[in-house]
Structures are given as C-alpha cells and as structure tokens.
Image 1 (tube, rainbow, N blue to C red):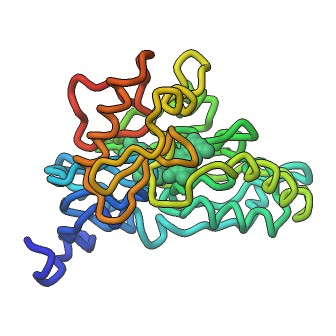
Image 2: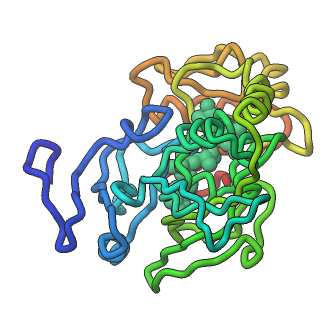
Length: 301
Ligand SMILES: Cc1cc2nc3c(=O)[nH]c(=O)nc-3n(C[C@H](O)[C@H](O)[C@H](O)COP(=O)(O)OP(=O)(O)OC[C@H]3O[C@@H](n4cnc5c(N)ncnc54)[C@H](O)[C@@H]3O)c2cc1C
C-alpha cells in the first residue's frame, strides 16, 4: 500500500492507511507505518491481532525516519469522545463520576471543559499535550497533580480481552500506571470534585506558570530525567550545549533539556544531539521520551 492508493477498510470497518508518523508527533519527525484508525472494540480486537503499537498524542516519542514495521493504532470516533454527564448511580454531592471518556480524547481540550464546569482534580495536568489514554498510561502530571488524581475506572484492552479496573487494582506510582506496555487504555471514567470555574482556572494558571521557560517549537518534551534530583537541563547547560544544532534539530536556547525541530528535522538529527549530550555530560542520564523502534543499548523509559 502507498500513501496515494485508495484507503482500504478492514474487515471490521477500521480505516487503514500507510502514513508518515511525523504528522502524529509533537516533534514532527517519523517515517511511515500502517495506521489503523479504530473507533469500536471490534475494530480494536482486529487491529491487535498482528504486532502493533498504540499511538496517543505522540508527545513523548521520537520515531525513526525509516518508520515502523508494526501497525500503529489510533483511537478515533467514540473512542475519542468524552461523555462528561455525571453518572447518577455513582456520583454524590461531593464527588462527580463521569460517563466514559475515550482514550483518544485530547487532554488539553478535556482540561478546558472541566475548568468551565468548575470540576477539580485534573487541573494540575494543564499544558500536557497528550491524549487521555497516553497520559493515563504513564500517569502524566506535574508537581501540581497527575492523572491518577482524577480516575475512577479504567477500561483496558489486550489481545486476550477487555477488563475494567480501578486505580486500587493497579500498582501505579510516579509517572507510571502499572499497566503493561501495549495494553490499551480504551476509556476511563473520571472522578472529580465540585469546585468553581474561577477556582479551577486559578489553579490551572498557577500550574501553567511553571512552563514559562519552555520552548514553543515542535518538541517531544523533556529529553532526560533528572539524575538523582539534579536538573538535567542544568547539566546540559553547564556542558555548554544550549543552542547546539544537528541538521534541523537544536538543543533549545530557552531550556537545555528540550530538543526542538527547527523545521524539517530528522530522527537522525535528534539522535546526533542525544549522542552529543551523552558524551559531554559527565553524569549518566536516563532518556525521558521513548524511541520507536527501541534502540538497543540505550537506556530509556
Ligand atoms: C511541550 C511538552 C510538555 C510536556 N509536559 C509534560 C509534563 O508536564 N508532565 C508529563 O508527565 N509529561 C509531559 N510531557 C510528555 C508527554 O506529554 C506525556 O508523556 C504524555 O503522557 C504522552 O501522552 P501521549 O498521548 O502523547 O502518548 P504518546 O507519546 O503517543 O505515547 C507515549 C506512550 O504511551 C502509550 N500510549 C499512548 N496511548 C495509549 C493508550 N490509549 N493506551 C495505552 N498506552 C498508550 C504509547 O504506546 C507510548 O508507549 C510533555 C510533552 C511535551 C511535548
């Protein structure tokens, strides 16, 4: 299949297209793969019958220029919609339990809707450019709050079937849901606390303030975890690497722990910068974002 041929539909009705993954990542880098756009559980089961990867907002990924051999699943349709109607059987005056929110729902828009409703618990995740499923999978968050602050039930799909769990059923922790890789977070019910739109907005603005120094260009977020509590950005800066370029990628002058795409960068450019950082910073640092496919010999999340 090439990008110009008519779009095939799978047996269960999923749209299947060979597409450049660069358009689905915040870094804007990545070669082609067969992308399965799935909107039902039946389509998910079919898509998962061959080797696959689940792609969310692509905000924590560096995908190789050569693309991927596995099919890539994207959640669409009802799996990317949010039913925020409080469930009367589960909600109380102090706690709102929503209907199902699809794993493919963009997190920033959801957070804005919750603010307008005056519902609290997830405002600390403001500014994270993820989808709900990806953010839940890694319990994304900031020092002001994380995804598991607002989860009631999670629906998880594996090639063996679908199950519903609560956070208590999982060994979740810091930036970790405890859900194995490639188990798909298809939908969640949120657990929220009634507040006011103004109070939620104030909390969001406070959390968002911490992002002031972050670059505005295409990026997959922070490159390295802080080793032993020391700022990775500070270490990279002290090694004199701010502003270093490789092809069309650059270590951001605003914040040394961000690699940005100046326009037309390749994954090879990004890897050249990662190699420069590893060889010039004296402390070993673990990669924050994921490399697809995985690079053997490199430590990563
Ligand atoms: C500008 C910027 C700022 C950021 N700030 C923060 C921050 O403050 N805090 C923070 O924690 N992160 C931050 N990040 C990193 C990133 O947004 C998070 O790691 C986020 O959780 C990734 O979610 P995603 O949907 O984009 O997942 P992807 O990048 O698409 O995928 C990441 C991983 O999640 C898996 N995944 C995706 N969807 C699902 C699903 N439905 N079910 C199961 N697994 C899934 C993928 O297979 C992959 O393993 C930032 C990134 C950027 C670019």
